[in-house]
Image 1 (cartoon, rainbow over the protein chains, first blue to last red):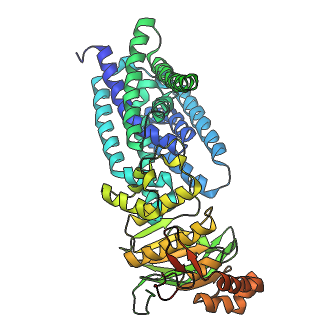
Image 2 (image 1 turned 135 degrees about the horizontal axis):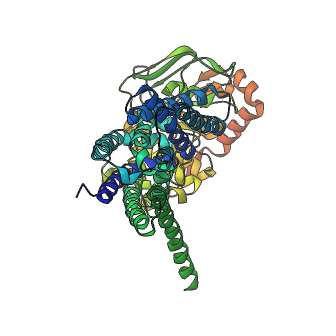
Length: 269
Length: 262
């Protein structure tokens, strides 16, 4: 069954959705959507450098995304520019830099669209191993830092005063985001990764009463979006990466409908 | 249950100063909190009260001086302003377990103590200002801290609630035998509920027992002579308060009056 490209795509997408759920929740809670986007955009520079230096793509993307996130923290502390300006500068300049470097390397043929929008149907067995091995590490590490990261998200000063080392948790979280971007780039692509992180988590908010419920629900909704998106792309012959994001969006819109329908019936009765 | 000099010091600042943007927020602060002692930092807005407390807890690094704090010191912190992002689902019950696991009956007990037992299952985003303040106090309390730090704990609480809250803080100190560091910009009731007052205005202006601080010229210079007058008047007219359950509390000592004393 693993020989079947569709089954491989489904398994790969499921793995990515499972780890994207809880991570995406923290991105929403900490208001870091644009931060995540910036890290994702920098992935193309990672691809370019990996090709240039002939190292593994995942390693290259991870290294660049991690460097960018640490550079951002450093620049934020200097406080010379507002965070959104810094993010804007880094997001687009790293993307542009990646495109320029790739185009200068005339000796390699690069499928740019594959990196930008994903190529889930070309997932190999090695990719699957990377996704599930990496995903296990990411979820295990997140479980370890969960309490201190959550406390830091509620209030950084409480976390610091009560000995929970919020800075360390924040740093680990950045590295986890870099890992997720590196291993899921191939599934939905650099430009769409953040949406897979954020949309299922945003959908889950309406149904969750605790942070843990929201994280689990976000993973589940992500898996449903992957399934619907892949089936849809097969039936309608649409690109799979964007189709998955559209499926996630539809789930999000349905959750809004459900809520307003409820309120409407409450008023009517 | 006033603290004695023999009680162990939980936390101590020596010559602590914090500088931000080329300006000293506070300088040369000497301060200690003993086990069982309630210390109140008072001073006008911008006098460096919160900064001093944050330096003591290790939230900000002091730029001069040093802070002595036991490695195993368990702190319970109630910050001045905290806003939980509305996208983060959180009930009062879950908030109690924020920094560590606690059994259900302990949660019931602390919520009972702060008077919001009926709000256990409520989302924190729906609480009123006063209820949320109590929930935060309960969250710090459930940790059974060695040192409680409360930054302006009575914000948005009415006068009667204010007295009840200070009485509760006194009870907590007695029960847990912890040190308490209170921060306040107003003086009347705080002064009465306190063992030691430290008056800040960028540096320590004066410190001592509430009455000695109220009479000191530095304090009068900072708050105006009417402030000390207000305290005296206040004592004269309101030397006790009636709690909802009928108990009578003396504001001067924070202790319940015996049957014969009233």
